[in-house]
View 1: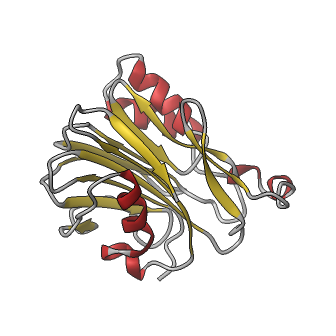
View 2 (view 1 turned 90 degrees about the horizontal axis):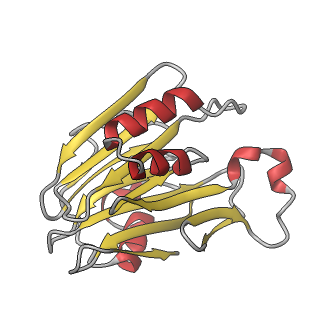
Length: 210
């Protein structure tokens, strides 16, 4: 099944928060994740820089840390969501206000915007989507070994049915491997890249890309 981009929030078996992002793409597969100073970005690979002229939505920051929480998303809304959380807004309010203001991506597919936020203790996570026909923001109480996810297509309504109860990633690099090819994500086609954050024993998020 092709579901497009994926964001997930999870709690590791050790009881630590995890935020996961995966690029799956049919139209623009020549992209990669890059670690920047205060973010992780999705950018075209060398030799494919001109792809951004075909679609301005394909390059963006996809992961930020704000007020100790990890924020992941599939577009340019990552930064304003993180900035509102850093300024003191609750994650639900930050996600809803930014995504409503920016709307879905007005490309040929009306691509939804999706966002995930998780606390370092892994107890609370939020998922949001704005589609052409709806905006949904959900808070989840997480248990160790549990992940919830939302995708741009098909699996595009965050809820209790979009879950993985076998989440066993131990760190950020392992989380990248997980969202690319393990658990429920193994059935989702055309993986391209991943960026993940997993809290360590000191409640600080460590990041990785694949």
